[in-house]
Length: 463
Image (cartoon, rainbow, N blue to C red; front, side, top):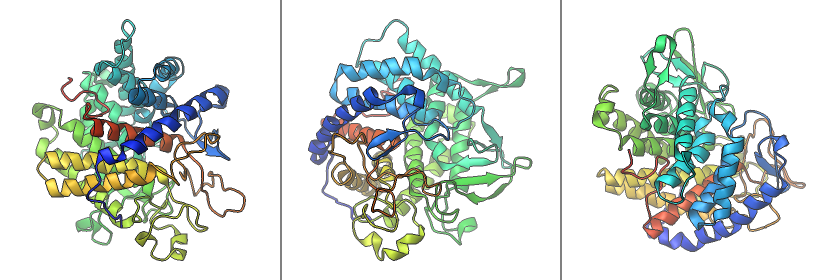
């Protein structure tokens, strides 16, 4: 269980955050200078150098979004210019990519970040640049929403690249692009010009995820553990019936792949933040604010409690809570995670993602009147952040292109690099891990400096 430091504050982490940006700048420029775009998008490192791995391209936005985060944190114009140029020249194809469920990853990290920076007055855009970014987000949100499978309870979900039967838990964080497109007044037009609400699809997908991929330890889930998650839910596409849990990147359907759990935690928290800015009348047709937000908050609480209970004391989880080698690491949750062990890899990227989710959920619950619970989650988030912002997770070797070490991509497929003399993956980085460490650092920097609250949809008062 995470040993929560109740005294930790965002300001206490300010020196560590500054060190992240110092190291980050060199690594962004190194990758930019060495990477051949013909190789596709960089995904994870092997021997300290980024490599590509074909599956679907879901990491390009993290590469260029990292440059925009670097500018956001440091005001170094080089990184704004880099992020803008690469967004305009290399990201357009991602806007109408019909084969993936990852639009929120690629396009909110780039087009969405540029729009947010303009709204915050961080730079003066070229003529109609904001309109271009907003048009891009509208298109991306509609394409994402078109991947729709109906369920027999009147709901539905955005299906994964595996096909219309497949609901991935990590799609929760890609819902950000539907949120932005809805905020911009966009709708999806189906056959016969039938308009489809992007807000409705966002809410229905989130509810379906919470109902079928999160377990609550009661009712239908009385046999299971509260807060456990399944990576994938499988549905009968003819009847809309739920069939069973599954997984692609976890150990089994009945254990928790921890990065999927982290995606769920952060995804639910950000959706709740966004819904707090949506007008009551817009939510009334979806069951109302109390029912909608209450259901998603219950899912977020369960996932957060499980993550805290099942993670080692320093806040870095092993890649799956049921990974078989953990039996050879007795009491592994009662001591700091060991990234150099011979039995099972840790996943620092899950920690970086979950830390931000815990912080956002904690703040949101405190604001909504659940002060004690909210503070517990927020302090857990700070505790996890302290761990990943320093060694052995922060990479201080300038020859290594990664920023966050000990990240894992796809253990079942054997895609991760295992160094000579080691038995499991360790010491390497991923684009999503590096990006989310930067995003976590920016979030903490703004909290400690008293700056504008960092949210994907921009200034809180903007409509």
